[in-house]
Image (tube, rainbow, N blue to C red):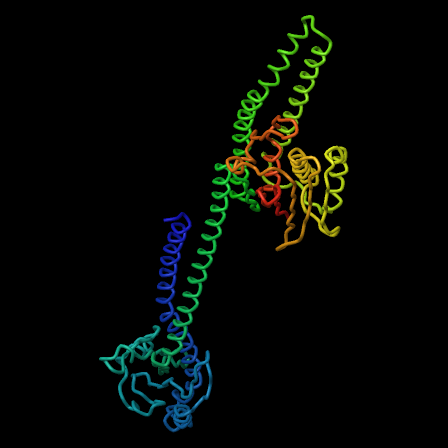
Length: 472
């Protein structure tokens, strides 16, 4: 199981438990909360009515007053109200008044006039100066049929002369409670889903960041070029920087060790030749022989210098993971400069040069690297092209890239050598001199092309050798 999935599962369990705990706690508080709020309203209403009925209860005229008719009219009113998107089409409060003995004097429902309510808590406690309230089921078998009753004392000169009770069935509150619970469930569920989505997004981002860093580390360990992942701040940026620093340290150490061995091996032959020639020059010998040995020393010195320069250029490219700049380079102009620098070699070999390149074509990359790579290709072609041969350069845009072709007349490359042409220090004898080169030129070209995101192909074709380059 991947790290991101484990993180997401832990996060999901946490969100689920937290959501369940919060929702269950809040849901348990909805019903009593609504009823407490309703009870507070009933208290205010009962006390207001106690003041309204006080004079008639004191004078004993409540039964003959207009309140009997008022309460009956109140009981049949249809408010036609919409509360929290729920319709209210009838009043649900019941109001009744008792005297000091608990006998009902007035009842908005008209059912209990003359009955003794002195034993009900709303009347019993209120007549004794306490807060009188009760909740009683209208149907003993139905838990949802309970009715809240709140009583308020009717006082005259400090004496309690009666009680006003306002009753409200809990069933009238149930739609609002259910609505509140539904909304809480929707909002809670929505927040949980949003939390899970954010958790999944975070897990995906973390997994993606780690995968990019892992791919980079794998590419580096396999010797392939890869772009360092960039992150904006935080631990991921620190980790990325640390991995890159470690790569530089490890690669630098291994690179120096490898190149020291390589350079030591490659310098043995020219140094041995120089030493042997120098020892022979101490003896007396004819002038022609002395000049030949001196020329050998000069040739081997130039070979060593060329080897060192090419090794330095190759090391510079191999250590690079990305381009330092990317500028537009007119291809035709660049090749003209390179051909002009090699005009003496072209004239000496009496070569025919054909160039089929549109002046509007441009390469995009580092000028020095691309110039050196194309120069190496031209030098390699000149080394193998026979006198009177053909050198053809062509380029065309294809699929958003530049397709560059370099053809030269030459003997076919042996099949065993084709797959090894870009290996470091691998070289074939030059037909003009019979000597091998440093074997670093095509390796340098391959590294530059790879650094620019391109491709290099060398193949035998009819009449010669064709080098194909795909470059941005």
